[in-house]
Image (cartoon, rainbow, N blue to C red):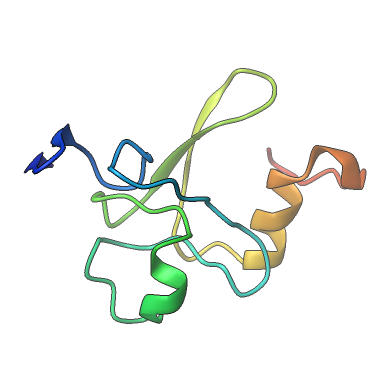
Length: 92
């Protein structure tokens, strides 16, 4: 999404100049855009997001790519992110 002092980079993909993490699950929603005011700044730097307001694309463990809506229930999002919890989430 533009070139910074460290070179060309994109939102949400950790290619910036500092190490970051991404969190999902209860209390960690998907951002609708980089200026999403519904998510506090303290969370916004550590959650997933997309410049596509309607969906954020994820690669799942079966190698499929799915568009996930920012309105997804954050508990369900956490289930999708945790392979070890044993939860099966339909229709995924």
